[in-house]
Image (cartoon, rainbow, N blue to C red; front, side, top):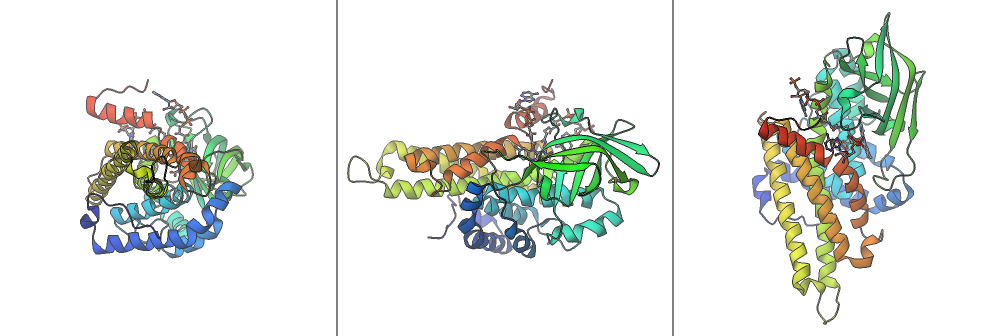
Amino acid sequence: MAFQGVDFMNIDDLLTDEERLIRDSVRAFVEDKVLPIIEDHYMRGTFPAELVKPMAELGYLGANLKDFGCAGLNNVAYGLIMQELERGDSGLRSFVSVQGSLVMYSIHSFGSPEQKERWLPRLQTGQVIGCFALTEPDFGSNPSGLRTRARKEGDSYIIHGSKAWITNGSIADVAVVWARCDDEQIRGFLVEAGTAGFEARDYHNKHSLRASVTSELVFDNCRVDQSSLLPETESLKSALMCLNQARYGIAWGAVGSALTCYDAARSWSLERKQFADKPIAAHQLVQSKLVHMVTEISKGQLLSYRLGRLKDEGKCRYDQISMAKRNNAAMALETSRLARDILGANGILSDYPVFRHLSNLETVYTYEGTHDIHTLIVGQSITGISAFE
Ligand code: TGC
Ligand code: FAD
């Protein structure tokens, strides 16, 4: 039976008709086009590139941005898209997050009029793919130390350094690269695939996010025209503003993963019989696990929903986004582990979506700021004391 949703606290009543319609249409897309193919892609470690064009046509790329062909949806509708896509697979949501929230948002917010005209319409239609390169081998949680250099030489910049763990790296036509300029400030640059001195190499041995491309990027004195600089980027703060957009989407997306795992566990527990001739759902310990899952999911749904409304009112703070990303990624990971437990041995099979989500969520817990980094961001916010160093 098609997925009916999980709405213990009647959160649907808080959505507008349009938001519900969008959510239901993405849900149908995931049922029809994603679920039949995703497990196979995951097991083979391939990205479902055939879904890019249909997702673009449905308006999912840069859906909460305005103009340049973007759908201009509100942030709750955008969040619901992320939730439903991640109900399919975190890798798919990651693709859409990187394309829209990191790459298109960077150009939309910090690009020149020419850069916007050149890239945004084609990024929206999926004709070109982007990646966002902040992390380096020695600078993950602490990007302020990054070492990639952009040295000015005449009308060019010479980019030199390396980036690690970059989603879409080798399939990207354009990379948003964060590099340190001669004045020591960190700024963003658009580097096109095929530029001499720029190479992307994939990680092939991942146990997580297997239906997503992750690459290392190498810049060996890579010369780009001075017009490649995103002129409105001022410092690391510009990159952090992009991260806020993606973290917001992850807060919703993680709920989607949790919904799949809870739904699978509940259904299984009603079918599976052990000891007496009654389903395992009739045992108190199993009910306790299911109740914990649905309670935490409901709290996660309310957190995302409230964040979305705040974002639409222009009142959403980055520490609030950190709280939601931190809570919902951890909640989804715990939910996936409990679901795996309830499915017993079957929980490790690819016949069920649970272990794929569990493995993905190990990454979701870490990328876009680890769980503990978000703890420190909220900790700093409520105490006024930075505990990073
Ligand atoms: P810090 O001194 O705390 O802050 C510097 C300035 O930036 C401001 N700020 C922010 N502004 C907007 N949004 C945010 N999220 C901000 N966080 C900080 C801050 O107020 C300050 O402003 P001002 O005016 O006082 O100068 O900076 P720090 O260097 O100590 O770093 C702080 C820290 C740890 C929070 C930051 O570096 C961090 O967030 N680290 C985590 C790194 C991270 O999340 N990387 C993600 C890479 S992209 C990715 O993972 C993509 S995964 C694919 C997918 O999305 O699906
Ligand atoms: P580290 O920073 O080395 O952290 C290791 C551990 O130390 C963590 O538990 C962390 O919480 C802890 N730690 C670190 N500092 C502190 C502290 N001050 N106090 C307490 N504990 C601390 N990056 C991009 O730029 N673009 C992408 O598209 C992208 N995609 C990714 C896709 C995948 C599949 C993965 C796995 C990662 C991706 N990343 C991307 C990188 C991601 O953002 C980083 O992995 C993340 O920021 C953490 O950095 P790290 O892995 O170097 O861990």
